[in-house]
Length: 595
Image (cartoon, rainbow, N blue to C red; front, top):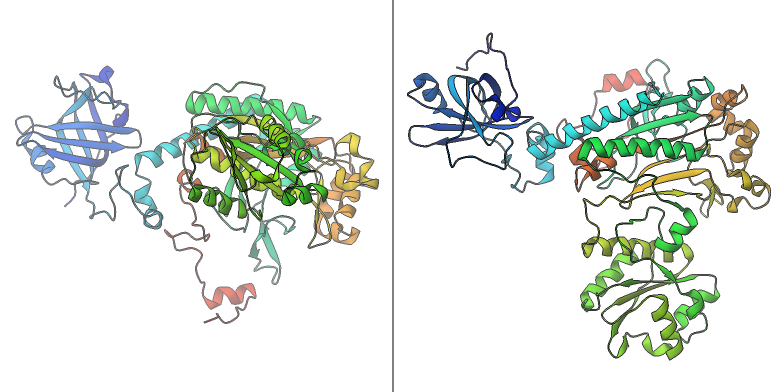
């Protein structure tokens, strides 16, 4: 039979007791981390969300509590009263916040017992993730995950305080809204009242936050749930959280300045790191030229070098033909990596092929010159030019990519990031930010044979590129900006189109007819016709930001109850089948399942 809590009141959390509390009578409650019987004295490590404190039970001090402690096992729930005392000489644990003290117990309650756990809760046990997610309520008892969620709370609090101090208003936007499929697939919710019609869960509050600017709220923010039905990976979830903002009467530099302040405050409060402001800024064109991707990791060098002109007249037909057809030949120098084995090089080639590359050329720089199957195709002058361009030295490994600009940049850029991780150049506790600006407004979709928006259809072009919308829309740049941290895009936004005429032109370029635009976005078009102010905004991925702040390898470790890569919840077994009556009420009939 378990004890009753009665009128016991917890006075302190376990992890907060220090030498300052010596001599005080305290009451603590929590879970038993470990029990140690020293043949008379019994010691219990008691844990709550703030940490662990040691309880000392002496039969000469309180025999009843000592006998009760003999029954206690790991993860039993107990309450204890006693006096905080210094630990005996030689038993101080300097690695623990509470390591100087223990509680001499005078009264103990056994509040609940625990069955044998499906896995150990210490930080060193290797447990399959599917088991961790099935028993997530146990997994969340782990110190690391509790620290992650406590830091997440601190970050959210810091964000709210910062925006409040800077004149922002927190406003909630609808969760049940209209399907306007322009990006990922929508999650649809059938309407019982309006049979045959569906709500959509929002991929972002984009349209509503623009409407708030038209409504005159000036500065809005929200920490908001968003939903996208897309293929998942380590840093994606079907439901995720954004720090969402919108501002009126501002330009993009002002928005970036304000958001830099928020980021600086978050890093200071969460991990005690001072972010050097202002953050560096790169144009999209420069980012692609130097790094091959629009989310470059600046923690290390190894920049991409364009050698197309150097090899255009060479005897190596693979390079020369790509150069002649308007493609790119790029290379990077992996310093000191000439010791890579043939298997290592084959692995790098296989990695590049994931991003569309047909192959990867390599050169080991030795005392005797280039060691490579392609060395014989170049003259001494061409070799000297490339060595100079790539700052090549003995012991270096040169990697070459020749393809269309898109494939050459992405494949070699992703390979650069892969090497940065493989060689230990990308340190988790080194935080390198960069703003990437001046993205293309549009890109051509070969399958659909039309332009599509790089960001979304409401992004404004650069004012100096307005005329290009009529003549060469593919060359128009957007008033868009992404903030990148250690190779991950943690936020993105843009100045919006606030002029109805320009918005209609944008829809036209995207192949959205006037009738379709009215059907999908009629309420926004109406709003733009009633004195919409210039406005812009940004959204940060809170989950991805927390993943970096906590040094986690998976986004699931910073979310209390995440989904698997198949978008299912192993804990609650969602999604699940529903009964026929519910389906009938919604006017839905399911096809027979395929055997």
